Image 1 (cartoon, helix red, strand yellow):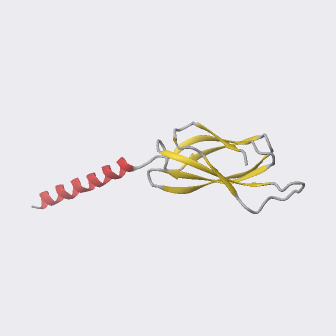
Image 2: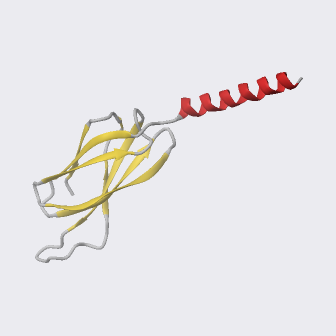
Image 3: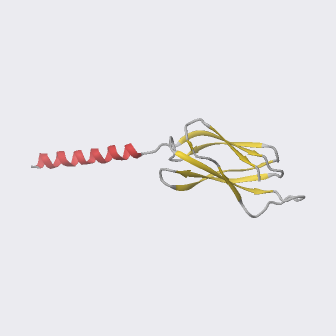
Length: 130
């Protein structure tokens, strides 16, 4: 009886470990995110949100705040957590530089791109035109 219980619990533990590893999602590593400012004013990117279609939720992806002049481009290299080989969307939050001023607008604006499958080492282009 004792041998049967030990075998049962060992099998149960193996099943739990296998199930957890089967559903574990890796990070999407070394993703090059390029933001192209197609608007007529300087913008500053504040953060990104990643929509994970598997979990049906948005996650904040903190990035270094970078100003992008009108017509310019900036890039970030990120490891996107828990979305490797998953269908995702990126939402870019930014502020506009106020005309004839050194100040930034207090209101964040955002743009959302199309869905794609996140793969290690890929480059994503985001165009901001507002």
